View 1: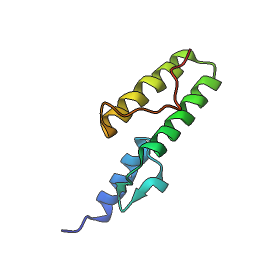
View 2: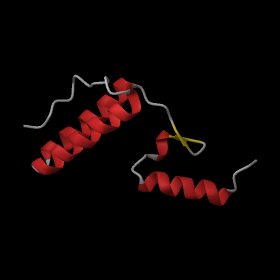
View 3: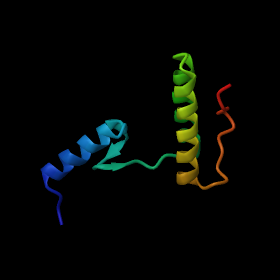
View 4: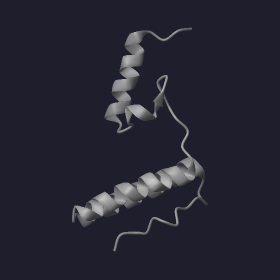
Length: 86
């Protein structure tokens, strides 16, 4: 069964609204990402949040990132390069 172009457009719109970059999409599906890549992206987002000077935002990025890593890679997954904001 083929998807219509409307449903693909809807999937792309939803992906963009969800914060997934178009470069990470392959035929309307998100690419698999390794733990190392996920940690690198999370570290980058956290660094950006910390640079903004907004400690609440940095804490939120850390907490949400930690939850995402564990939900995608298991509860024992960790990113040694990502430290909790001070």
